[in-house]
Image (cartoon, rainbow, N blue to C red; front, top):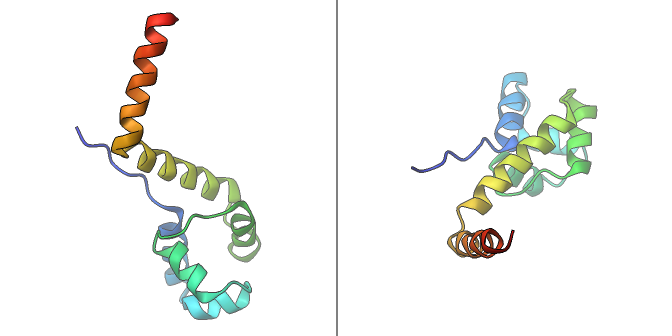
Length: 100
């Protein structure tokens, strides 16, 4: 069974900007963030940092904890889908099950 990847917080921010009718370029200028950085976040290619989440709270009133929690869930699920990490986790589980 394939696990569903949680929503990247950038998707929520992208929808918020679209619903407010503000362009990414204008918003990047307003919050003093490089346009490329903002665009990468909104398209799920870059993580939302704590600092960025706090800036979104100041600009849009979005709870920064929500954004960070979304990012953490997204990152954990992506990590769980890495074949080499999955193999390592299975080795750890077996080793610990034998001892603990």
